[in-house]
Image (cartoon, rainbow, N blue to C red; front, side, top):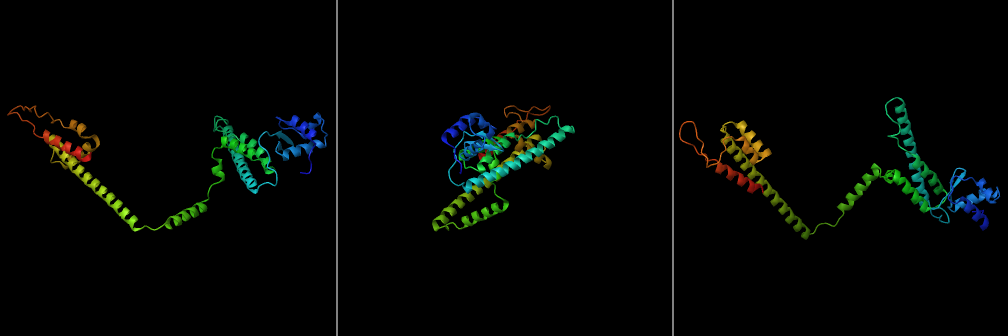
Length: 294
């Protein structure tokens, strides 16, 4: 930093520039600063982080302070990555908006405003970010990142994402690290054997329960067909099992017009009354099925 203004000149410039934007150095002449000194004062204030530069104009920056000394390469690389992303995103949104406008002109869209992807916030953030290429101001960078995140919440995942090759290498490293773990001891083998035995017993019990439930379901279907008076038809057995499985036993009873309470005899037109004797067996099948499946 070759030029450093006097304290009174610096104070005059700060009092005039504070809170203002898009100020040219020549405007400092109005506060008594020489026209040749005004650009130097603005450059000095920009170097210490008090002003943001946008072309030939300056804007007051109330955020953060500049870290003295040479710029950190980590900071500079981080800013360059974000700048590259902003350039690509602004160009992409501009191309999309132009395509949307052409579609609107050709009658393909009712409005070129509703689906528009605005880039004004990103353009403002890019102008502010350009100052971080010359001065190291972490607070200003964090505020710019906050402003970008409000517009594009997941932009950091777009900037820093693993390539397919990097992901494959990471997976291979994880497999090697997992394979290089401490080998099992006899205590570990006994634990895993006991656990596997429990798993096998549970699976066998589940299979037996499923088979018992299937047997009861078939018996209930046969009982239902017996009530319908069509036990000899094998196709009706499939229909009855489907009805029992999908609708349940209670609703399936509605399909059997012959089901009546055991205390009410069925009186035919001729001959002695017949009392049904299959209701108790049916209820027994139903109760056994509920006990097995519970």
